[in-house]
Amino acid sequence: KAGVTQTPRYLIKTRGQQVTLSCSPISGHRSVSWYQQTPGQGLQFLFEYFSETQRNKGNFPGRFSGRQFSNSRSEMNVSTLELGDSALYLCASSIRIGGSYNEQFFGPGTRLTVL
Amino acid sequence: AQSVTQPDIHITVSEGASLELRCNYSYGATPYLFWYVQSPGQGLQLLLKYFSGDTLVQGIKGFEAEFKRSQSSFNLRKPSVHWSDAAEYFCAVGTSGTYKYIFGTGTRLKVLA
Image 1 (cartoon, rainbow over the protein chains, first blue to last red):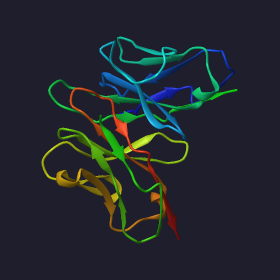
Image 2: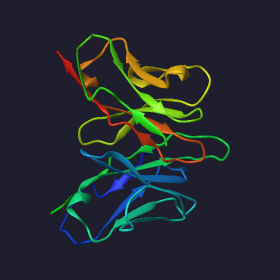
Image 3: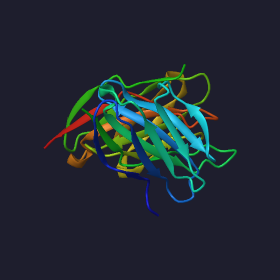
Image 4: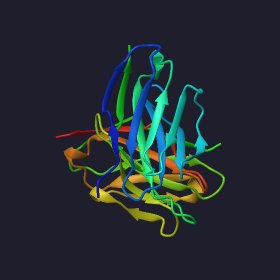
């Protein structure tokens, strides 16, 4: 079974631009979460989507948004990029079966550099 | 609020030596606990998880972890480290009803030949 895939793997943008990152979860997984990883702040939760609805949101400004499609694929958008948005953005998927808790599996990440 | 503490930022061990990475969590109820490993430039790979039951859990690559409720700890162990284990290790806690993981700051493991 294929793992979580993220595209693109690397991105270079300039301040003020916007960017869209894509995540395809493991087949059959319905929950997708996004995390930002930086050397200074570590791994921080951005948001989780399940059944095309945002279920949880981390403490990030409104410039960070996401969505999930009916096939469970998810996109994350960052508008008006700032230098501090340079990070590794990780996507994780979980089967999220009701009534039980399930682990998340992570993709390889998208490395975003803002110049 | 939930939190995870990994007190050791860097650990260096010799190949073949035993390893213990520490993790302490703060959460009011029984948490869901995880250890992940990250190689440079890569995503996170799940080593093992604790949801309930036996407090000693076995994972991949010969790793194990023990949940100690009284100490709010979930330490990762390996009896004999291999050079390929050099990586960064993250402890994480998940809470019921949410898939928002709280991660520790990570422990970077260096293995000496």
